[in-house]
Each structure stands twice: as C-alpha cells, then as structure tokens.
Length: 235
Image 1 (cartoon, rainbow, N blue to C red):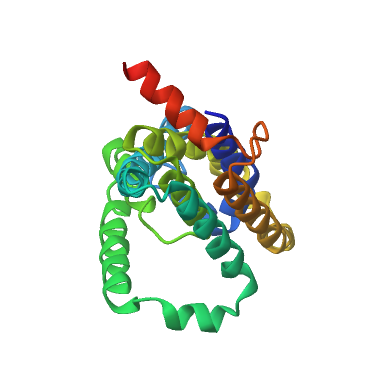
Image 2: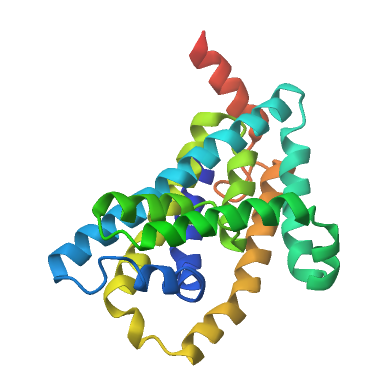
C-alpha cells in the first residue's frame, strides 16, 4: 500500500507539467466564459471525466501486471519499467520516436482529437465531462509514468486505485488552471517543463528500488512478504 501513496505524489508534483500540456484545453472548455459557479461545475466535470479514464486505464494495465505476477516476474517488471522510465529521459527524443509504432497510435489520437473538437462546439455539462474523458486518452509523459506504476501494482483493483490517486493529485492545479490559467506566463511553463525530467528519473529509481525488494519501508518494500501476507488473508 505504501506504493499507492507515491501515485498521489506523482500527480501532485507533476501536475505543474499539466499547466503547459492540458492547460490550453482546460482554458478552452465550453463553460469557460460563464459565471464562476458554472465554471466550477464544468471544471469539476471535466476533471472527473479525465480521472475516470485514468482509473479505467489503471485497471487495464493492472490486469496486465497481474499476468506478470502470476508468472513470477513482478520484481523484474518493476525494475524493467524503472530502467525504461530513466531511458525515456536519457535517450535522444529522435531515437525514442523511431522506436514507437506510430501509425496506428497517431491515427487513434487524431480520432480522439476530432471527437473533442466536435464536443467543444456543444455548451453542455455532458460534453464537458466527455472532453475530460477523451483528454485522458491523449499522450502525456506524466500519464505514462502513472501507467508504469499501475502495471507494477500487479492487479486491476490496485492499478485502478493507483491511477485514481494519481489523477486526484493533479486535480488541485487543474482546477486552478480553469480560473487563473491565463495569468501563468510562458516563462513559468517552460521552467516547469525543464524540471520534469528530474522527477521522471526519480520515479524510475523508485520503480527499480521497489523491484529489488530490499525491505526498506516506503522506498523498497519486501514484495515477497506482501504477497505472502495477501495469501494468508485470503485463507
């Protein structure tokens, strides 16, 4: 359970990255120019939709992680994810771009964006919720970091909880963007983006420590002991 608390921390610390990435979408919501109360409700619905999608994604990747647990690879997967997270910062972006199976992914992203554009034309609470839900599917390095954590959890329920807490961590900043985003300068956004690689590398190290199972509270819990305790509870 200690690892779940890191999900909220990732979301809270990384949410400043959202200012540059998701901020323009939050500012362009159909309810942006309405009264403060309607803007608040719309912002809550938008973020609820976004976090709901995160939780669903977490459940799916938690299910994937469960297959690794059943095969006895949970620790190896955690270490491998940590290494990949660090490499995502260390390797040149052009090289990473070549490794990506772009065609199908980019086609799917285009479909999501087209659907979002149509929803922006509707000034309703339901469309605002759906915009948030679709926004949760757009590519984002911070979300990928959350997905890596959800996979490492090793079961659908904890994977969903991980991404839910991750999303809740981003919530305060995203709500503030809806009201004060226009006063956040480009210089501040650039500084936030520059700090992101440091946090990503730190989380990669945490994944590796978790996989090594060094029996260090919070940082590297004994995974074998946790699994044994879970089995005992089932009996």
